[in-house]
Length: 246
Image (cartoon, rainbow, N blue to C red; front, side, top):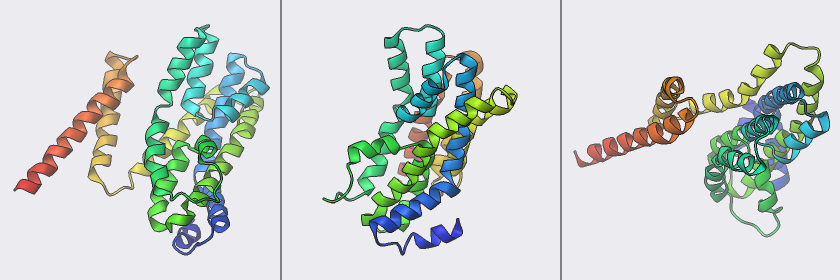
């Protein structure tokens, strides 16, 4: 991985950046996402989906939290409109990811369609790109993103199939915890940042989530994420203003 990081500043072509992103994906986010998809495949088998249905969900939805919500609500017989709203709400995180990632990539006339490549955005690949983009030339960042995004996406369906098959032979308590590898990797990625606000948000959000889940299990994520997260941001904002005025 150190060799890849050392090449970030020197890569100067679209194809070279794409190959570098492909390699970076294999070393970092791709195995993490693969583990999550294996867990999803096992979960799909337990709920009663066919292997083709599980594979299609991973291939076309490609959003693990949304996939879990989708099949759980479907197995409970919830209406299609309610499922659509719930899945859409779980995927709102992609809006902020796209708004923070793509403005760092200059628009060129010969690049592949950005509208299609949005499908390749995932938590782990986004975190890698946000970390590595400042070290790269701006004109090759899109190739790097496509390399990471493609390898992660292409492993989603095979990982789901593998998890579906091995779930018949491996205990469920071994396969299902793999669902949490991806969000855990995403969380640990942000512990490396130098911005104190991000670290405070991780610590306070984690504690608040555990507390509010005991009181309001259905709304704990919204309360701890939007409510407590906003309070942490406001506290940091006024602290910075206070330092500037003093």
